Image 1 (cartoon, each protein chain N blue to C red):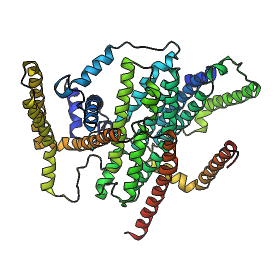
Image 2 (spheres, each protein chain N blue to C red; image 1 turned 60 degrees about the horizontal axis):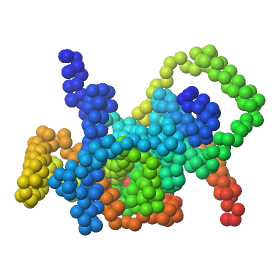
Image 3 (cartoon, rainbow over the protein chains, first blue to last red; image 1 turned 90 degrees about the vertical axis):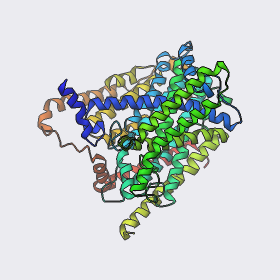
Image 4 (cartoon, helix red, strand yellow; image 1 turned 90 degrees about the horizontal axis):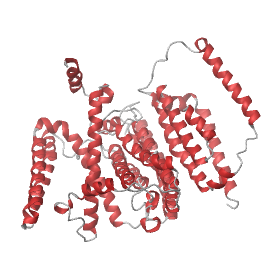
Length: 424
Length: 153
């Protein structure tokens, strides 16, 4: 037992990611944590999306299962698992069977390099951002396979639309990413990097998030990426691949039960993955907001209490709503459950307020909070934008975003060069 | 990689062939990774598996699959193919048997950490001219494709 415990504890002293330190135990722990965290995030997103969309349309949304429909995603998951698994007789068996797994694999593999903090990542590759873009572009293969193997018209059209859309927006996305990567090499000669952790550290060293760098160039590159990433994940207003009014459900029309839920899981985790690229490249990754304006030890102290305060706030909301629950005996269990949930959230908040804990946790918190903002944006887009027509989509991709991306890239490079020549 | 490659040429269904080709390309990317060339591997995944093969599949799916399966598979260049395959196989055997005298017997120092920077300095320094010629060639190919596709510009 001795050597094993020593092997496990030896990592705790290092300041590297488990992958870089080569510690298999902690690597597995991190993989499990990321996997569980993602699944919980997808479940939470499912509930939040329905609630927020409903409130945007002046409806109530799910209210029946659990207080305010909190248990609705669990009920949905059970329903999906119990459903019959149907495969169309004319479908291409093997490809139909593999397709959902390809999509899920591509969506989850990218999280290997996502930096939740300077040490909180599964591993750090020196081609991190390239790896993320490459693997997430593989998910389109799964979609095309699903659409073709279903051997039916709606899925095929959905898959064709999806592949055309993803290939064309990937170009603009790549150009925006390159202009951000260019900025990493500016503080010293030869420090340019593609590693996700390196990119955030470059922003830390330059004391500036890349969205504000060379204003407005960083902002424009971020805007291009923000549009392209919505198109890349097939979400509204670019959800032509699954436009329900035209194609019933697009590429996954023929899928049911568990396989369908795999597509659902992959879509949401892909959304989280591209948001984390945007957060890492432009929004300073795990760094706390206002690093320059509100700097100093006092502000560091105040910001380190925010993670705990957020959880305490959510716990307080739970208590408030538990008090407001109907006093009918039928609602007693739900009220007690909501109280319990509030107590759990409050306890988490209190634990996070301990300085020793919050030092290690707050970078994860800021990264997740920035991703959560993007998730809300996704829901907001879906609630407010009408769907694009396909020719408009292509026009937007090739005639607007691509020239903009090229222009931003050239301008960024020239400004950086001028800065180096004149030491501005 | 070999299994994927064999599947590419033996499947009758073109979509299955294309998918097998994707497996082959991904396996090739992993070989690059094992050779400590992560940048090349990443580019291989993005360009071939993520970009070009999607367009391949896109085109194949637009073609009627049923007809192409029923038609006789033609292969009129098998003589040339056999000669080329024999020559390549001979080359492989020669390299395998004489490998110790051709290549250095020690592994090269791995440059994993600044691999990307090394490639950049090589491409834009030493091999600048070749690189530009290759990009010019691609530009010509794009223009040619547009001219052929559109009769009236």
